[in-house]
Image (cartoon, rainbow, N blue to C red):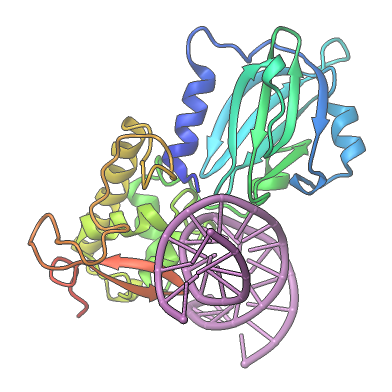
Amino acid sequence: MPELPEVESVLRTLQECPPVLPGRMINSVIVLSDTVISGCPVANFTGELEGMLFSSIARHGKYLIFRMIRPGVGCSGSFLVFHLRMTGRLFLVPREHSIERHTRLVLILDNDLALRFDDPRKFGRVWLAANPADVLSKLGPDALTVTPEIFRSRISALQRKIKPLLLDQSFLAGIGNIYADEILFRAGIHPLTSSRDLTPFDIERLCNAIRDILSDAVESNGANIDGVFGKGRFVVSVYGREGLSCSRCGSTIIKIRVGQRGTHVCQVCQPFL
DNA sequence: CACTCTACCTGTGCGC
DNA sequence: TGCGCACAGGTAGAGT
């Protein structure tokens, strides 16, 4: 479930002072579900990771990227990349709390802590790659930091329905179903609108909405929907609010399907022209 | 290229 | 109460 703001929230938690991960060595790796390891055999993943040090952490779209270094031997390094998909969670725990029902991977550190990856639905994935591009090469620019100029030039090259386009990670990385609905509501654009029919003013509002919604959500530590999606304070305007009244105009929010995805829209604030 | 469908997986919540 | 089933979510890959 995590989208960009929730992943950013995980990143910030792991970077909180005092920073716990940088400099820590992985003493041992416990893989409880082979399917979460992508791109190499589990034995290689485990063998290569043991003895490596955490260096720095970054994010691109919904991916978390840990730079790892092997002490001693030259400056050989690699990148540990996580995608949490819908139900994945990544967090530090005391090492004696290292395994629960949905735990898929545990990295035991050289102190009293462990980095644990839990995922009830086993959709999340982990890669160990020599280069981040081995995993991330198909992604578009990060949705939180894309410039208006880049956004404008990318969108004007395409003719797509706007909501599936926002969800396309090769167009822009980081937007999922929840924030796509919130962004289009903020911009006053109907999700079925063709990107070709957007005026320059529409595109400017859309670009602002992406920036405003995502940065609001990051500052709120993500959303909290039915206590299931995230634990943050971001307040949704349309997502999951079908049958309730629009906070802006009072008319009833409806739910439609766009590209096989549940889509929430205020027909008054987001007219389909 | 744009789009649709399916598979992956499991917890939840509905109707019967 | 219990059962079965649709559904939610992100992405890859195949097909139209």
